[in-house]
Structures are given as structure tokens and as C-alpha cells.
Amino acid sequence: MLLKGASHRTKITDDINTDYIISGRYKFKIQDPYELAKHVMEDLDPDFFSKITKGDFIVAGRNFGCGSSREQAPMSIKYAGISAVIAKSFARIFYRNCFNLGLPLIECDTDNIDDGDALEIDLDKGILKNITKSLEIKIKPFPKTMQTLLEDGGLVSHFKKHKGFGL
Amino acid sequence: MGKTIAEKILSAHSGKDANAGDIVIADLDFMIGQDGTSGVAIDVFNKMEGGKVFDPSKVAIIIDHSSPSPNEGVSAIHKKIREFSKAQGISLFDIGCGVCHQITPEMGFVVPGNLVIGADSHTCTYGAINVFSTGIGSTDLAAGMISGKLWFKVPETIKFQINGKWPKGVFSKDLILKIIGDIGADGATYMATEFVGPAIEDLSVDARFTISNMAIEMGGKAGLMNADKKTIEWVRSHSKKTFTPVESDKDAKFAKTMEYDVSKLSPQIAKPHTVDNVSPIEAIEGLEIQQGFIGTCTNGRLEDLEIAAKILKGKKVNAGCRLIVAPASKSIFIEAMKKGLVQTIMDAGGVFVTPGCGPCVGTHNGVPSDGEKVLSTANRNFKGRMGNNKAEIYLGSPATVAASVIEGKIADSRKYM
Ligand code: SF4
Image (tube, rainbow over all chains, first blue to last red; front, side, top):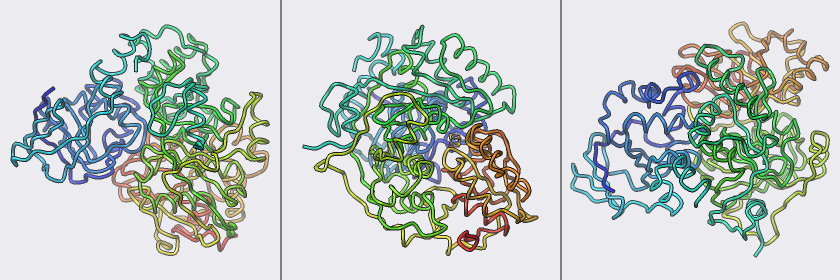
């Protein structure tokens, strides 16, 4: 699978928590995921949502998605049109939630990706190309369980297909 | 080779010889959701064509995050939860019952050796009574409610050996803040943690919950402790379920071991906007605050209210400051009333809100204003956490909050002991 898009990177890059991704102000009262998505990363950058073109990426440093278990966090990223999040590492609950929703998380060195860089990810080859900087970055392969969940399009369709866990 | 608590519980529940790194599908003993996550879980349950919950006696939903409802959006979610719970015959704890992580052990739903999931990141709290419990998202909860199972990656474990005698005025909250400050917000990501040693054994079960509760603040999947005599008595007085405690083998393999001596510890404060930004009280004393908050699944228990009341007795909350208190459950609130703690705290100028999460997560009940500084007994001080991203949140023990609201500045509680 090939993913193409631009990088979105905020000033803060490490320990971006789920409260930053989607504030408690919205997550409890808005049920429509498209409405929720309009507030994605708002506390870090009020214009974040308006800059996204479908297929783009969020790029961050260490421990992306730490904090609460709120699935509204990956949901608002996905419904904002982001095709993958790229970071040095992810927090555990967030990691599960994303693959359950069919949103791929790419683990790799992100020091050489700036805001606005054009990126291309070849998931089969395990390579991320930074077109703007003419660089190739190796990405960490997905564990088998995650690969299966992604191929099935997330846990809901996986569950329906296998009538339970088929992992 | 020997096994850790995590490996043993996941082996027993998956029927496999589970070792760190393996992926297993395991049977769940209990699962919970709260009002911030269950609405989505119910939608996913329906999308998965869930039909009936696998075993209604093993599922509970607690309405605690925005309770009672502050607006119609939340009311719609609460309604959905009430209807689902009734139709499925699962336990529902409606407004005012308390915080999910107090209700679940207090109602005797979970006992040593259990495997438990919760659609809330602080589900790791029950590790204090020897339960492997971990936070998951709404989709995982839906899958759990349908099948009674979930997949787990068997985690490695970091062991914290806690020695020494507790000095007066230093509490379990101070220890866990110190540990998180040392190891960092992602220091235990994908790993279980175990807390052992004489200083843990000296703590009450209430005080132990505070430590396990915050394992997630270093990325931990579980915050485990052994079941000693105190644990077993506590569990027996809350639950009729039978259980077998689980301990790590002597030759179990740990990712690493870290040692602490509490006798040298002073009260600790986490500063904005990350939990691992920790200072000893001496470095921050005197900083003016406008609001104190005592409550949450970390420090809203009876013992916490007792400590606060003792310090506040006969004193007044400073005129430049407010004190909000949210008991972690209705039974704690009632017990605190019987003991006169509520009277003492109110006489001092404290304000009580409904048992539940209170202002912890910023939906209502005490949202700070721009530029205000709040000292809270909660577990998170993220920017915007209490509903205003221009406010600053500091974290400390109930004793530190009580002493600080008297002075209107961050204060060392040891002088009030
Ligand atoms: S008290 Fe705070 S941390 Fe605990 S469950 Fe409620 S919102 Fe979460």
C-alpha cells in the first residue's frame, strides 16, 4: 500500500497527549466524528484542521497519544482525513485504538521531517520517502496482529468477518 | 524459568504458557466503561452486530465523568447508556454513585488474580489489589462485551522495590510522583509495573490505590502489587467472590528493578503541563494558587479526606483561594459525613460537589479561569485538562492541597502535622 501526503507537525512534538488531540471540552458532548474532527489538535494549533488535505500525515516525536483512553482521539484524526500518524513512539492504549479503527501508525525516526514536507510511504517495502528533502527513512514493520487488523479494515470488520477474534 | 504476575495472570486466562512478548487471547473476568467512552462503545457494539452481552454480570458502566450532566450533548450520551444497560441487564451506576475506579473494587467486582479491562486509562488502579487490570478504548470494550475476550501482548515488567520508613507528612502520592519524575512519561510504555517492599506493605489499601492508579502516567499497562494480609481483609470485606492471589516467582525475569528509600522523601509536586515535570516541595513552596481540588480516582478516598480534614480543622481557606472537594464515591461521602469530616472541611470554607470525577476532566464543577493556578490531587496536569488551556495545574497529595489552600500558596504540609 502506498500513502502520499504532506506532513503536519506542531511546535510541541514529544508527549502529545489525547487531551491535546481532542479536548475534553468536545469529546463528551459531540458524538458526530466529522464534527469532532474539526477540533483536532486545536489546543496546539487553532488552524490545524483547516490545513489538512485528505491523505496527509501527522508527524511527531516520542510518546504520541499518551494519556486517556478516549477513542475520540484517533477518531478525530481519522475523520479529519489523516491517513497515518508518523512518530518515534506511541503510547500503548492509543496504539491499540488506532489499529482497531484501521488507522496505521508509522514508527520511525522523525527528526528529518519538517512541517509541510511532502511524504510518500510504501507500507509493503517499509520505506518512508521525504520527497521535499530527497531522503529515505526506514520504518519499523507492523507486528502481525496489527497487520491483520489493518488488512481487515479495523476491529469492527475483523470481528464481523471472523465472528469474533481471528488473530 | 519463573514468571511475573503479568505472565501468570495472562497464562491462566489464555490457557497458554504466556511469556513477555507473546500475543494471547484471554478470557476476561470483568470489564467497565464510563460515560466518556461507553457511548462510542455502544455504537461499536451495534456496528459489530453484538446482540447480547456475553455475560451481563461481568459488565458495569459508571456515569462519573460529567455527572450530573452539564449540557444536552452529554445528556444524550447518558440516555443512550441508561437504555443500553437496561436492555442488556448490566450494572449501571448512575450520577452520584462515584468514580468508576472506586466503584469497581468497592462493589467487590474485582478480586486478586483477575484479568480486567476498562474503557478508561486509569483502570490500572486495581493492580493495588493484585488484579491485572488495564485501560483500553471503546472498540476493545465492545469486542470484550460481545466475546468475553480480548487480545493482549504479554508485557515485560519493571519492578519497583520500595524500602524505608514513611516520614510524617509524606504519602504514597509523593512516592509515585517522584517515580514518574525519574522514569518519565513514557518510561514504562508497553510494560507492567510491580511495586513491592516494606514501605508498600506499610501502606493502607487506600494509599496503595493511589500508586497503582498512576502507573499509566509513566505509560504502564498495569500497576501491580502483591496481595498481603491487608489486601485479603480488604477484598473479603467488599466481595464474596473466591480468589487466588498471584505473586511473581523468585526467578522471574524483570526488564529492570529500581529501588527507592521513602525515609528520605519529601512532598512532591508535578508542575504544568506534564506529570513527569516533578519538583520536591522545597523548590516550589510559596507559589500563589487560586484553587485547590481534593478528589478523583487518585486521591478522593476516605483516608484522603481524613488527612485533609485534620489539617483544615479550625483553619480557614485563604480569601484568595477556593477549595473544591469531590469524594470518590457515595459511600465515602456518607462515611465522611458520619465522621464529621465534611463538617470540618465545610467549616474551613471547602465546597463539596457530587461524588464522581468532579472538575478533574474539565467538563464542569470548577473550571479555572485564564492564568489561574490550580493545585489538585488528580493524576493529570495536561494543558486544558480542567477545561481551560490557559490555566496551570499542579499535582500534589491531599495534605499538600489542604495546607496550600490555607496559605493561598503551595505550602509544605509537614508543618501542619
Ligand atoms: S477522576 Fe479524573 S482521572 Fe479518574 S476516572 Fe475520573 S476523569 Fe479519569
